[in-house]
Length: 235
Ligand code: CA
Image (cartoon, rainbow, N blue to C red; front, side, top):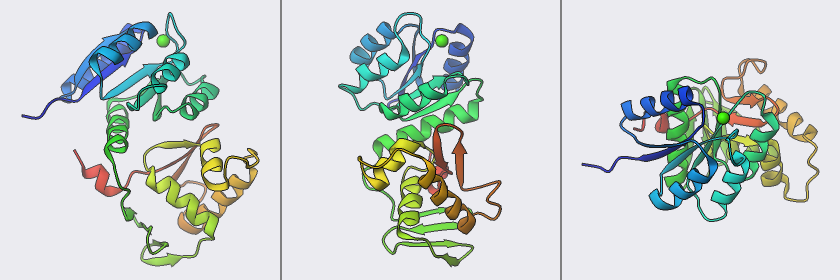
Protein backbone atom coordinates (compact mmCIF):
# COMPACT_ATOMS: atom_id res chain seq x y z
CA UNK A 1 0.00 0.00 0.00
CA UNK A 2 1.37 3.40 -0.92
CA UNK A 3 1.66 6.17 1.61
CA UNK A 4 -1.02 8.81 1.26
CA UNK A 5 -0.07 12.27 0.13
CA UNK A 6 -0.25 14.65 3.04
CA UNK A 7 -1.85 18.07 2.49
CA UNK A 8 -1.85 20.94 4.96
CA UNK A 9 -4.87 23.24 4.61
CA UNK A 10 -4.38 26.69 6.15
CA UNK A 11 -7.71 28.50 6.03
CA UNK A 12 -9.60 30.38 8.74
CA UNK A 13 -13.00 30.31 7.03
CA UNK A 14 -14.70 27.19 8.35
CA UNK A 15 -16.92 26.51 5.31
CA UNK A 16 -14.06 26.73 2.85
CA UNK A 17 -11.78 24.67 5.08
CA UNK A 18 -14.43 21.94 5.42
CA UNK A 19 -15.11 21.96 1.69
CA UNK A 20 -11.41 21.56 0.88
CA UNK A 21 -10.87 18.87 3.52
CA UNK A 22 -13.84 16.81 2.42
CA UNK A 23 -12.84 17.06 -1.23
CA UNK A 24 -9.29 15.99 -0.48
CA UNK A 25 -10.25 13.14 1.83
CA UNK A 26 -12.73 11.83 -0.77
CA UNK A 27 -9.84 11.76 -3.21
CA UNK A 28 -7.62 9.74 -0.95
CA UNK A 29 -5.38 12.51 0.35
CA UNK A 30 -4.48 12.81 4.00
CA UNK A 31 -5.44 16.22 5.39
CA UNK A 32 -4.16 18.34 8.25
CA UNK A 33 -6.11 21.51 8.93
CA UNK A 34 -5.23 24.71 10.72
CA UNK A 35 -6.57 28.24 10.95
CA UNK A 36 -3.61 30.50 11.67
CA UNK A 37 -0.23 31.35 10.20
CA UNK A 38 1.72 30.41 13.29
CA UNK A 39 0.07 26.97 13.42
CA UNK A 40 0.89 26.58 9.72
CA UNK A 41 4.57 27.22 10.39
CA UNK A 42 4.80 24.82 13.29
CA UNK A 43 2.82 22.04 11.55
CA UNK A 44 4.98 22.42 8.43
CA UNK A 45 8.01 21.71 10.55
CA UNK A 46 6.50 18.85 12.56
CA UNK A 47 4.49 17.07 9.84
CA UNK A 48 6.41 17.80 6.59
CA UNK A 49 3.31 18.05 4.35
CA UNK A 50 3.65 17.22 0.63
CA UNK A 51 1.56 20.22 -0.40
CA UNK A 52 0.35 23.31 1.45
CA UNK A 53 -2.85 25.15 0.58
CA UNK A 54 -2.41 28.61 2.06
CA UNK A 55 -5.06 31.28 2.51
CA UNK A 56 -3.64 34.82 2.37
CA UNK A 57 -6.06 36.47 4.79
CA UNK A 58 -5.29 34.82 8.10
CA UNK A 59 -6.23 36.07 11.58
CA UNK A 60 -2.68 36.32 12.96
CA UNK A 61 0.02 36.53 10.28
CA UNK A 62 -0.35 37.70 6.71
CA UNK A 63 -0.29 34.65 4.40
CA UNK A 64 2.50 36.35 2.42
CA UNK A 65 4.71 36.32 5.51
CA UNK A 66 3.90 32.66 6.12
CA UNK A 67 4.93 31.96 2.52
CA UNK A 68 8.20 33.91 2.90
CA UNK A 69 9.02 32.10 6.07
CA UNK A 70 8.26 28.66 4.56
CA UNK A 71 10.28 29.43 1.45
CA UNK A 72 13.31 30.37 3.53
CA UNK A 73 13.81 26.68 4.34
CA UNK A 74 11.38 24.54 2.36
CA UNK A 75 10.66 23.72 -1.29
CA UNK A 76 7.26 22.17 -0.50
CA UNK A 77 4.67 23.03 -3.17
CA UNK A 78 2.49 25.90 -1.92
CA UNK A 79 -0.82 26.80 -3.52
CA UNK A 80 -2.28 30.13 -2.50
CA UNK A 81 -6.00 30.38 -1.84
CA UNK A 82 -6.94 33.95 -2.63
CA UNK A 83 -9.96 36.18 -2.94
CA UNK A 84 -10.59 37.73 -6.33
CA UNK A 85 -9.66 41.18 -5.05
CA UNK A 86 -6.11 40.15 -4.14
CA UNK A 87 -4.56 40.48 -7.59
CA UNK A 88 -1.34 42.18 -6.51
CA UNK A 89 -1.00 39.70 -3.67
CA UNK A 90 -1.27 36.83 -6.15
CA UNK A 91 1.60 38.27 -8.15
CA UNK A 92 3.67 38.90 -5.02
CA UNK A 93 2.98 35.36 -3.80
CA UNK A 94 3.99 33.77 -7.11
CA UNK A 95 7.14 35.88 -7.28
CA UNK A 96 7.98 34.87 -3.69
CA UNK A 97 7.90 31.22 -4.71
CA UNK A 98 4.28 30.08 -4.43
CA UNK A 99 3.65 27.35 -7.01
CA UNK A 100 0.17 28.42 -7.98
CA UNK A 101 -2.95 30.12 -6.75
CA UNK A 102 -6.62 29.31 -6.77
CA UNK A 103 -9.28 31.97 -6.59
CA UNK A 104 -12.34 31.73 -4.33
CA UNK A 105 -14.90 30.47 -5.10
CA UNK A 106 -13.49 27.35 -6.76
CA UNK A 107 -14.78 23.88 -7.60
CA UNK A 108 -13.46 20.45 -6.72
CA UNK A 109 -12.04 19.65 -10.15
CA UNK A 110 -10.07 22.90 -10.26
CA UNK A 111 -8.71 22.30 -6.76
CA UNK A 112 -7.65 18.74 -7.58
CA UNK A 113 -6.07 19.76 -10.89
CA UNK A 114 -4.00 22.47 -9.17
CA UNK A 115 -2.77 19.96 -6.59
CA UNK A 116 -1.83 17.40 -9.25
CA UNK A 117 0.09 20.06 -11.16
CA UNK A 118 1.95 21.22 -8.07
CA UNK A 119 2.88 17.64 -7.16
CA UNK A 120 3.98 16.88 -10.70
CA UNK A 121 6.28 19.92 -10.77
CA UNK A 122 7.78 19.06 -7.42
CA UNK A 123 8.69 15.52 -8.49
CA UNK A 124 9.65 16.20 -12.09
CA UNK A 125 13.40 15.84 -12.55
CA UNK A 126 13.97 16.20 -16.25
CA UNK A 127 11.60 18.09 -18.49
CA UNK A 128 9.80 16.15 -21.25
CA UNK A 129 11.38 16.29 -24.69
CA UNK A 130 8.05 16.70 -26.38
CA UNK A 131 4.97 18.64 -25.32
CA UNK A 132 1.71 17.66 -26.93
CA UNK A 133 -1.77 18.96 -26.29
CA UNK A 134 -4.74 18.97 -28.67
CA UNK A 135 -3.27 19.90 -32.08
CA UNK A 136 -0.17 21.60 -30.70
CA UNK A 137 3.18 19.83 -30.63
CA UNK A 138 6.44 21.25 -29.34
CA UNK A 139 9.67 19.32 -29.79
CA UNK A 140 12.19 21.00 -27.49
CA UNK A 141 15.28 19.28 -28.90
CA UNK A 142 14.44 19.88 -32.53
CA UNK A 143 13.14 23.34 -31.65
CA UNK A 144 10.09 22.61 -33.69
CA UNK A 145 6.51 23.73 -33.15
CA UNK A 146 3.60 22.43 -35.17
CA UNK A 147 -0.16 22.84 -35.16
CA UNK A 148 -2.27 20.18 -36.92
CA UNK A 149 0.98 18.67 -38.24
CA UNK A 150 1.93 21.91 -39.96
CA UNK A 151 5.15 23.51 -38.85
CA UNK A 152 4.80 26.96 -37.30
CA UNK A 153 7.65 29.39 -37.76
CA UNK A 154 8.46 31.17 -34.52
CA UNK A 155 11.22 33.68 -33.83
CA UNK A 156 13.82 32.68 -31.27
CA UNK A 157 12.17 34.72 -28.54
CA UNK A 158 8.75 33.34 -29.41
CA UNK A 159 10.11 29.78 -29.24
CA UNK A 160 11.70 30.47 -25.85
CA UNK A 161 8.42 31.88 -24.57
CA UNK A 162 6.34 28.95 -25.77
CA UNK A 163 8.88 26.48 -24.36
CA UNK A 164 8.97 28.19 -20.98
CA UNK A 165 5.18 28.11 -20.72
CA UNK A 166 4.99 24.50 -21.97
CA UNK A 167 7.64 23.32 -19.52
CA UNK A 168 5.48 24.82 -16.79
CA UNK A 169 2.18 23.74 -18.31
CA UNK A 170 -0.80 24.09 -16.01
CA UNK A 171 1.03 26.60 -13.87
CA UNK A 172 0.63 30.36 -14.07
CA UNK A 173 3.87 32.26 -14.70
CA UNK A 174 3.92 35.93 -13.70
CA UNK A 175 4.91 38.68 -16.13
CA UNK A 176 8.06 39.38 -14.10
CA UNK A 177 9.02 35.73 -13.97
CA UNK A 178 8.65 35.36 -17.74
CA UNK A 179 10.51 38.60 -18.51
CA UNK A 180 13.39 37.64 -16.19
CA UNK A 181 13.58 34.10 -17.63
CA UNK A 182 13.65 35.26 -21.25
CA UNK A 183 15.34 38.66 -21.20
CA UNK A 184 17.36 38.35 -17.99
CA UNK A 185 17.23 40.02 -14.58
CA UNK A 186 18.16 43.47 -15.87
CA UNK A 187 15.40 43.64 -18.46
CA UNK A 188 12.91 46.46 -18.38
CA UNK A 189 9.89 45.16 -16.43
CA UNK A 190 7.58 46.87 -18.89
CA UNK A 191 5.13 44.20 -20.12
CA UNK A 192 4.69 45.74 -23.57
CA UNK A 193 7.31 43.69 -25.40
CA UNK A 194 6.02 40.52 -23.75
CA UNK A 195 2.47 41.32 -24.83
CA UNK A 196 3.58 41.95 -28.42
CA UNK A 197 5.40 38.60 -28.52
CA UNK A 198 2.44 36.77 -26.99
CA UNK A 199 0.09 38.32 -29.55
CA UNK A 200 2.39 37.10 -32.34
CA UNK A 201 2.56 33.61 -30.86
CA UNK A 202 -1.20 33.44 -30.54
CA UNK A 203 -1.64 34.55 -34.13
CA UNK A 204 0.61 31.68 -35.19
CA UNK A 205 -0.66 28.84 -32.98
CA UNK A 206 -4.23 29.67 -32.01
CA UNK A 207 -7.15 29.13 -34.33
CA UNK A 208 -8.88 32.12 -32.75
CA UNK A 209 -6.33 34.39 -30.99
CA UNK A 210 -9.17 36.24 -29.27
CA UNK A 211 -10.37 33.03 -27.65
CA UNK A 212 -7.17 31.04 -27.08
CA UNK A 213 -7.21 27.33 -26.30
CA UNK A 214 -3.51 26.84 -25.56
CA UNK A 215 -2.14 29.89 -23.75
CA UNK A 216 -4.45 31.64 -21.32
CA UNK A 217 -4.09 35.14 -19.93
CA UNK A 218 -4.41 35.37 -16.16
CA UNK A 219 -5.52 38.99 -16.05
CA UNK A 220 -3.12 41.21 -14.11
CA UNK A 221 -0.94 38.21 -13.21
CA UNK A 222 0.62 36.42 -16.18
CA UNK A 223 0.10 33.50 -18.58
CA UNK A 224 -0.70 29.82 -18.23
CA UNK A 225 -0.23 27.06 -20.82
CA UNK A 226 -2.85 24.33 -20.88
CA UNK A 227 -1.67 21.02 -19.32
CA UNK A 228 -0.15 18.48 -21.71
CA UNK A 229 -2.03 15.26 -22.37
CA UNK A 230 0.47 12.93 -20.69
CA UNK A 231 0.19 14.68 -17.37
CA UNK A 232 -3.59 14.89 -17.61
CA UNK A 233 -3.73 11.12 -17.90
CA UNK A 234 -1.48 10.69 -14.90
CA UNK A 235 -2.99 9.74 -11.52
CA1 CA B 1 -9.21 34.06 5.29
